[in-house]
Length: 297
Ligand SMILES: C[S@@+](CC[C@H](N)C(=O)[O-])C[C@H]1O[C@@H](n2cnc3c(N)ncnc32)[C@H](O)[C@@H]1O
Image (cartoon, rainbow, N blue to C red; front, side):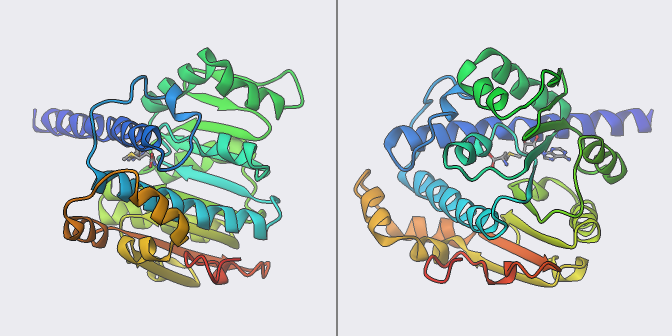
């Protein structure tokens, strides 16, 4: 009886975690509708713009998207696209389509999320030609794998898996031609926080053990990388990142909406951070990649 109750509680908690991707997507859709940044694909994952979000939230998302994209793009450029990206807990993220439009496609872009989230994402892709066309265009044969819980094409792969089960995760990624020899960028935005410290450490450890040239970009928590096999780790709080973004673009977005209380934005941004860690056997210079737009690769 006790075991059954425990199972039910865990299940309910997981269901709550799964719905967080909708909140992230709706916030991003609202911010893009205001002009903070461009994302022509987000409309296909969030039907309406939704209720108004405060300027603090919009600016916070702006800083997060710019900061994470900057690290990701710098890594892909250093590897001259001869690399892989693994987006852990990707939710309804649209990065694959942005990279394709910007000619920055890695050899393969992987996404992992719970099977039910993946099923919803695949349904959107199947029913919206603007999403499916770029996947078909970058696929060379007729044999594109598409079922309820996975999509596998030459350049884009979506896998339904629980990130807390490392053995299963490793097996599934390898089944879809993950190559441990390729430089690999991990992305986890607001994901590790939903796991226990030991579960997230296992995941970060597995990434360090499996790849010799890699970078892990994490939005939200600072510590843990150096203890889990990474050679170099850094973190910046979002207020610092905001102050390092290209200031002409920051001036542009600051004119989009009036912000009454600057202190509130400051407090909010200081609460979050982007951390990143690298391993660099191939000497690509990954440790030199940083969010500071001035010293960027
Ligand atoms: C807050 S959302 C962020 C989504 C996306 N990274 C973004 O920034 O738009 C967190 C995502 O992590 C996924 N997630 C959390 N824990 C997970 C786990 N143990 N296994 C697979 N996915 C998980 C959730 O399903 C959800 O899609």
